Amino acid sequence: MKLKLIQTGGFAGLTRTAELDIDQEEAEALVQQLTASAASHQPSPNVRDAFNHVLIVGDQRVPFSPEDMPEALKPTVERLISMLKVDSSQ
Amino acid sequence: MIDKLIESGSRTVSARGIENKFRSYRFRSDRIFFSAVNDSVRASLGFRKRARTAKPVLEVYTAGNKTSLPGRLLKRGKSGYSDKDAERVYQGGLQTWNLYYDMFGRNSIDGNGMAIIQSVHYGVKYQNAFWNGRQMVYGDGDGTLFGSFTSDVDIIGHELTHGVMQYSSNLDYQNQSGALNESFSDVFGIMVKQRVLNEDVKASDWLIGANVLIGDAYAIRSMKEPGSAYRNHPVLGSDPQPATMADYQDLPNTPEGDWGGVHINSGIPNYAFYVAAFNRGGYAWNTIGRIWYTAMTDPGRMPHDATFAIAREATLYHARQLFGEGSLELNAVALGWKEAGVE
Image (cartoon, rainbow over all chains, first blue to last red; front, top):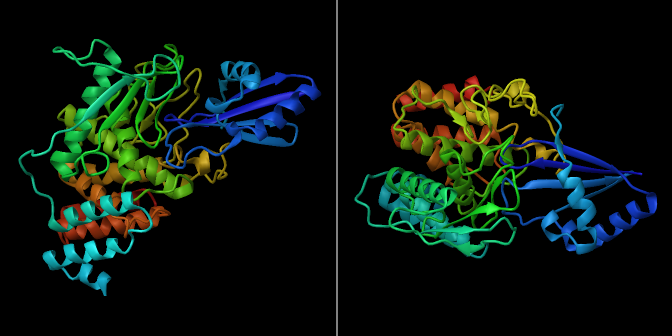
């Protein structure tokens, strides 16, 4: 199952994406844990030029901030972040 | 009645009127209350070059390649900071404070001498700089695509200006008000750069982030020609910014759409400022910059959900107030918005 990360914004306003194939069970668990964690809360309303992150699995999308990531999810999400490439079609 | 007082032209009366008006806002937010009074009273008294009676307070920290903020406070030695990035943000923060204080009479981010707090070396090869609501934060870049985000004084001015807006118009970070928020940050960022380099509107390259994006042919944004900051870049492709309303990008107001393309559509008000300043001539901060400052810090005429059209009205109003009917400045501002296609 495809796990897709979209990163937008930042000072330069670039869109970056990364994809990872993982099995469905793992993907569903990840979405569930991420949604339940503090990482999925909206960032402070006064933050400017921060990156925006959205994780997409199937038809589910979870906006999140990597700084508040639960330890258990860090390896997968950090791996995705390290794979981000600029999508210049946008 | 209070609004009438404010518009009544008598400067003493209008300052008091503004004070009363904002007193009634007090319950919304003390912070906004205080900064709004300071700005409006200052605006009503007119700009005045004055001897420096205030001094900036600057603190530079290192996040030590971690993401806890502010990190560890760095000490400044006789010859400055030993850390190059720390020295750059110190000097950039100082120059930004100088522009705001010397030219617009504003003492720091909140108008009340707030400490300018900056952290360098945030994260690992972090490719960004941001304002977190309390301070400025800079990453080192990956060294291939981006150098350190401390490399351009206009980026430092840009981030500090996000703080100034938080304590004044507080423009919503979405759609047109978000693009205005981004644009005001570029406008004051470029003026910091122009003043440091002593460049008038003709000498300036009007480029934002000319150093941080690696490669001589590239910058992050061009205010003079939005959409031309980078072309056929091997990684980034081409600069997507529009210069006029005809090319406004209707992006979704979601994280995927960068909240309606706040870093994309800022090209339009950026271009309006450039055209206005260029046509007026001279140093931007003496003319059109004053108009933009007064408009940006006037929550009455620049509400948090302002559109480009409302920003146009606010700048035309303050051009009239500051420079008069029929002035070169008023004509230049009208031309700027016209060229950008904003009515």
